[in-house]
Amino acid sequence: MQVFLAEHSGFCFGVRRAVKMALAAHNSNDDVCTYGELIHNPQIVQKLEEEGISVCKDIEHIKGKKVVIRSHGIAREDLELLQTAGNKIIDATCPYVKRAQELVSSVKDLPLLIMGDPDHPEVQALLSYGGKQTKIIQPGEKPEFQNWETLCIVSQTTQKLSNLQELVAQVLPHTLELRVFNTICNATTQRQEAALQLAKNSDLMIVIGGKHSANTRVLQ
Amino acid sequence: MQVFLAEHSGFCFGVRRAVKMALAAHNSNDDVCTYGELIHNPQIVQKLEEEGISVCKDIEHIKGKKVVIRSHGIAREDLELLQTAGNKIIDATCPYVKRAQELVSSVKDLPLLIMGDPDHPEVQALLSYGGKQTKIIQPGEKPEFQNWETLCIVSQTTQKLSNLQELVAQVLPHTLELRVFNTICNATTQRQEAALQLAKNSDLMIVIGGKHSANTRVLQ
Image (tube, rainbow over all chains, first blue to last red; front, side, top):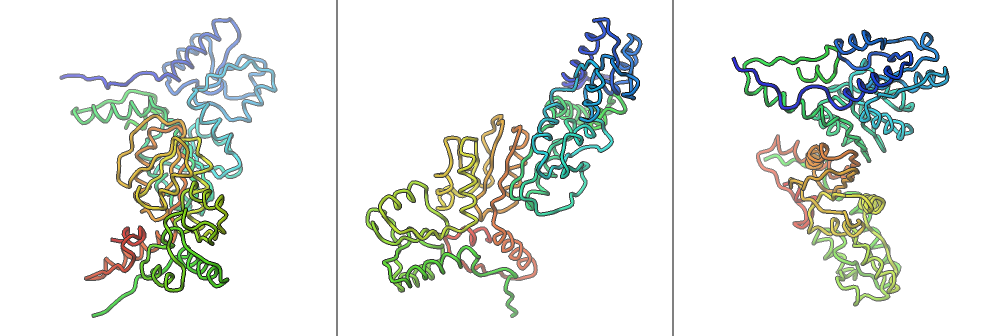
């Protein structure tokens, strides 16, 4: 039996960065926690807990602590609550996710579709940066067509490019101006393409990754 | 033999408007000409000439005349020359084409692709409103991929929607922000869909229209 490793695998830049930031924050001897799981990888989260970096889910109980913001980002309101409560914030939000949040925020007066999984923390956080006309649309879901003057589209960073292309083609006839922010992460695309390539030449393929990780699930 | 007429046929709004404007200008007894053929329909152009509305192609020879701008629009430089030469201008540019010109003008500092026939007067006029980073791309042509931060796309009003959708899908992976101005005219889309529908249920289909008309040629 021959075992091949996909060309692109392992932690992406945003995950590596978040773990490094959390450990660095801990090393400065402050009382550190992460607000929600730092990354979608149970082994690493457990390792961080063993190091003394706990996962907190309730803002009320972490007042004044040093809080590391998870790689997927958190809702705008939660960030404001943490800031108001005097927490020290270490923002480990992946810079690509941060860019998507900033884009959503910059067009909050316009109709905006966020393509992604509505239950995923990244998407929930993105939604919190949008305005009244912001909606989530699941990949493959048919949008409710209207005649939009200007419509914006942004994607969860770990979505498939083909799903974004399909959505764009569907809404294009119904808009006068379509602004598509291609927020799909390059690392995600590379991993998807490498997995596809390897799957074509293999009898069996095993995807190793967090069960809650969108990155992992998209590879299935 | 049964003869069916496509659901949408005949002159579009822009063409009807241009002919009406030219005739109204003539009725006021001024010396009237059109700069280039008013519309792509030889019979109508001939009829207008019989009425005394000539087609002029040389700005030098029409100084001081009342000039009707063709429905496809003219180059920005030509319009300025006519204005400087003291011509009275009747702008019969189709409002949908005008909108496309204004959009091209508004993003002239950004990379812009105009999808259309490079030899068509509408596309040539659109190009004149663009900046240094404006390029024409023919339908079906593969774009020269770069990594664009922001890329704008505009279409000749008479292009097929499917060609625009294809171009958008192709460039999307290479852009961070894609701004698509859907300048394809509704009348064009309706005629294309009606022609397709009729062709499916007919043994023979005849398209009647100007040989130089993009609207006509797209129906083939």
